[in-house]
Image 1 (cartoon, rainbow, N blue to C red):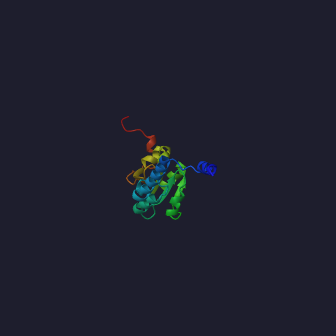
Image 2: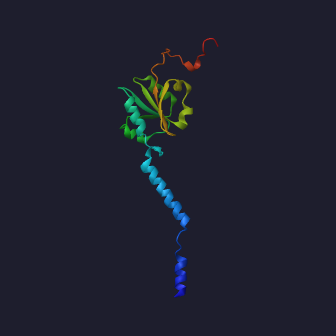
Image 3: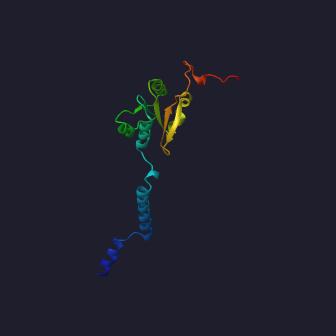
Length: 155
């Protein structure tokens, strides 16, 4: 009988109270963050970006993602969001009718060519996520001259 008690005690060993306490604290912190501060949690959704685009857009304007494809953006725009990894395609879209809104993830910003960067005006950034830019309308028409290949007067 004593042997059975010993073997039963050896079989079930409750977890250390510190381990239980840490686990409960982590679950509690996750619940508090998700319920109390949802805006501070990382999001994979492009909903806020698409909403900003819709608030700013006029008839004929378009949204294009430069970088990886975002299925969430395609969902929220009902398939209207375009996608490219080609700078030349981005430029041709910007040269088309209407203003071009460009969404770029932060890690793709250095990959935007300088002539394109000069044509964009920053609208918003969502944490470490994407930034939204709009094509500048205050740029003078230079009749095909690339400003990045010209030098300032007097130099």
